[in-house]
Length: 33
Length: 565
Image (cartoon, rainbow over all chains, first blue to last red; front, side, top):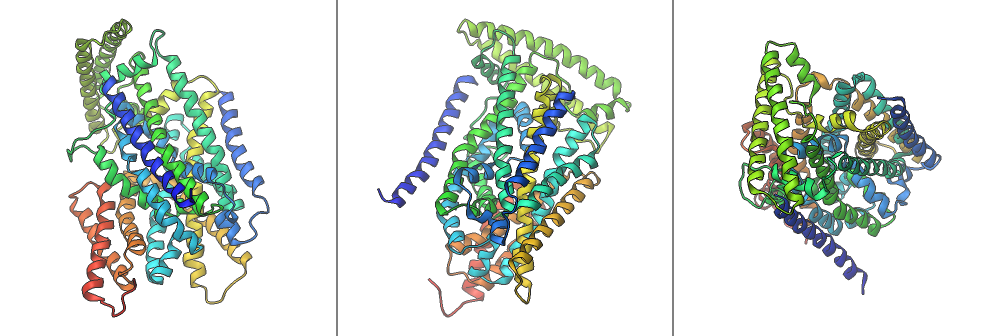
């Protein structure tokens, strides 16, 4: 895999990880409030 | 504070200072060593350093208190940050590295001209010069009022400790010390979190604690509404938070200086990516500690207002009796709440989330808020200058009254480490901007490397003394912290606008951006004077205005025959 593609993947992962955090927080909120 | 707390506090802080000086001894032979840490910093040190710079003492004093009063919604303010990290990694970092700049503002001369560079550098020096004073003043005023320490002495001690290692080792010293400061901070916060859980009633699980927080309206984490009255929503976090993070991490030298010290473009980018991964959960965790402190106080005596100075003001006033009555009402209310909370846990343990009890708990919470509001009114009547918002005092009150011996010292070390790490980044950024963008740039004849290193070191001491002096006279100004936040928002937008034009709109040239920035800044002052929007939005408006005004000027006023593509 060329280096630029790998870096694009890193950036995508940051956004995906944060989207997962938000979904996780949303679920916690639904369960506990 | 016990002897063991003093020992933990003093050893932790002295270790950081001595380690910073020792580790960087003799490693600052030229300006590149001193300002860029000889470009040797690995990505994880950059990541920790970036996080330590942003996490000031107020983050650890104020954020748990914010969660205590308003719940977890503040975390949304950081939702735009990861997107800003990606934009900076793709655009800002490669350009800074390619041009081998020492400061972000150096880029502006290469892209535009000297006056644009000087304008951005001066705006930064004004704003960060005030801001660095506040990073010392804000925790000092809280700790001195709670612990009875002398405010001036505390300011001088924090400032001097930072000056010692920043002067000695420059950026490298800041980076290596921030690693340990972050370790102390996270260790202290984790220990506190587990200790709070341990201090909760015996039959209460972590899940039950979250249920109690939810029943008291503290688990309102994500808000998708478009209500402009609500300050923290998903949308304001994604937009306002994005622009603020872009300005702060992309154009503020105290952050740019951290990742410019990276071994390579990739190491700098990885450092920011690490921040993008960890910042939101870290902020969530600090808020969760505040929520757990709230749950803890559902079963323990709670003050009507956490700021002890307000209590002193009331005791000296004619409103003393009225306040005592409110306190009695709060005691009764707290007892009632404890009973209902215990009953609610009982039902939860039998797998029944009782809706009637939840409604009752919310009603009691509202009553408690009413009592607190009435108390604030009385405090304002007793002393019209008093800060009735006590969120900065909630966590420190808990630390001093409920944490065991030794841990109090560690938590105070956490708070002071956070103050020192932000101050150190501020000082190196102020010194390098003054040395490179103002002093070196305006010298008629070039000087030796040693001369510039010494000049930067001198500027570090100069700005350190200014920060200490500013922190010492802080009490003379009302709402100083608010003022500095406003000053930040007023200038940040324009500076971001200049950089965005530089990176993305090649069509706009030097004259248009300079006058566009001046025009935008004047408009921002006027909007601020009219007080029509929250100051948090001035950043976004400033950036957009700078772009639009400079675009207009370039198209209609300063039209050039040659258009660079």
